[in-house]
Structures are given as C-alpha cells and as structure tokens.
Length: 382
Image (tube, rainbow, N blue to C red; front, side):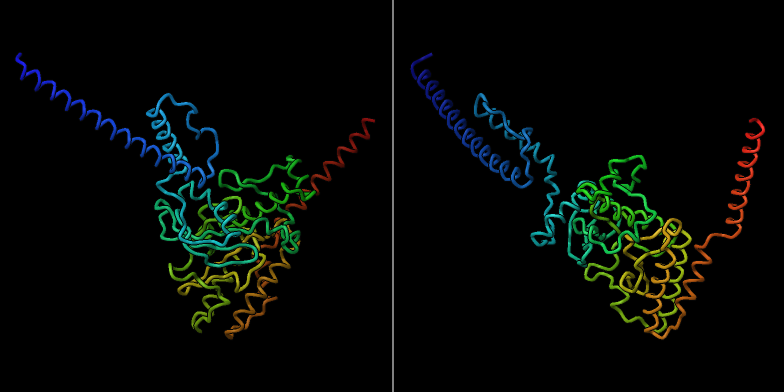
C-alpha cells in the first residue's frame, strides 16, 4: 500500500469519526431535550391529576443520562395509562368554583365507567339538586343524557323528612346498585340515629338510591318517567328530555292546547294509578314535577317516594298529590273533584283487598285456636 493510499484512508477514517461524533452529539442533544420536555410533561400531569403516590417517582440515582431518560419515558407512560390521557376530562361546561368541586367529584365514576364523556351545560339548578346536559359514551346508544347531581348532603335539611322515611329501609350504593342495609347492621343504625357524619352520609345516599330504584320499577311498569342509566353516591344518570338547544320545560311553564288538556290529565291519572299498583305514592307530584315535551309528559323527582304498604301517611300524601294535579288542569277548564278521585284511586289500587283481610283474620283465628288447645293440653298434663 503506497503512501497516497494510506493518506486517503486516514482522511476517510477521520471524516467518518468526525461524522460519528457529530451525530452522537446531535442524538445526545435531542435526547436531553426530549427528556427535559417529558420531565415538564410529567410534572404538569402530576399536578393536574394530583398523582403523588410513590409509584410515579423516577429512580433516584440513574447510572447515566440514558437510563434517566428511559425511566422518565416509562413514568410518563404510567401516568398516561392511569389518567387515560386519550380522554382527558376537559368539560365544555365551566362550573363555578364551588360547584366544580362537587360536580366533577360526583360525576367522576361515570367518566371512569365510560357512561359520559363530557358535561355540556347546566340545564336546571335547584335547592336540592341540579341537572346537567351530558354527552354520553357511544356505548350508551343515545345522543344526550342527563345527570342529576345532588347538593352535598342537602337532604339533612329536608323538611318533614321523617314523614317520607317512615317504613323505609336504608339503601346504600354497592357497585352502582342500590343495596338495603342489613337489619343486623347495628353500626349503621346507631350512626343514623345519632346523626353522625357517617349517618348523615347514609341518609343522604339512601334518598338517591330510592329515587333510582323507583325510576327503574316505574319505567318497567310503563309509567312515563325518564329512563335511568346509572347511579352513584351523589348523582343519577337518566334519560334527557329535550334537545341540544332546549331542555323540556315543566307543565307549570307551558300553556297546553285545549285539545291536549283531557289526554294529558288521563295520562297523569293513569300514572298515579300504576304507581299505586306498584306500591308507590309520588309524594310531591305537581305541575312542577311533570316535564312536557312535544305533546308528551314525563314524571320526575322521586327521592321522597312513599311506600303505600308501610307508611301510614300514604293516603294523606296521595290526596295532596291529586289535589295539586287537579288544580293545574282546572286552569284549563277541566273540573274534577280531587277528593273523590283520590278516594277512588286509593280504594281501587291501594286499599287492602277485603278477601285478603278476611283470609288474614281467619288465619289469625286458627293460630289463636291452636294456642288455646296447647294451653288446655298443658293444663291436662299438669
């Protein structure tokens, strides 16, 4: 190999080495830059999702910059998986400061369960609860869905709540389903009686569970109520009545046409009758709790529903419900004797069957006779 050839080879080797060093420096700069960017992303998502558990901490002493880079890359991936960054919870609706605290906390389970993906607007605010228009997950199969979110423990101040609680078991939320508190659960009963923080929470959740379970039963029975989709400790997902631009108003807010008066009254009367057949009295039925949309109605607001079999005030509350309904339709010229109607509904659909009472009395007499015979036998043995 001559001198010229050696010189050319050394020159080529030098160029190759310089090219390698340049490429290595560029890769190192890119890696460092990417590591810094992802470190900033990590800190951002940590603060955003309040992820402070040690699982999300990078190794303390990486051996080299490459290991540090890979550790942070893996950490960001974990954060992304936990936070589901493909569906970051950025809602279209911007709640007020205080409202936002309990709103997102109440609806978080429905996001996690792929039932809703966005909160679009506040539909109606109230003293007890507020209703929000939500965009459901595609798997729900509807265009819009309503979320009824209760104000934190607002039922502690519900007037005359003892009237509605008579004969009720307490219900809790177990895996999104109402579950009755067991009779032998003395801890819960004691907490409710003493009105401790835990007891207040149980009472609060119980009202929600009763509304959800009542909606389920009445919907199956054919009563025009919103379809229930899900329930949490502080919110209920249900059918949204209305469209994107307007929620259904209540009967109190609309003036119905003359030819609608009698049909809508009959639907309401039949709804009351069906509820009685199922063992329920609404408890607060009026034009304020009946939605009207495109000629049809939906009965709403059932947390205070009364059991006709176990609540001694059921008949009196039914009379009040019927009175309020009749007062509304009287505005449109429909004259109905509310006392007579309430009596007819109760006697036909809710009053105990005389034959059943006779059978019960007969059974009681048989038991008493058996007890008498036992007493006589006991006397003979003595």
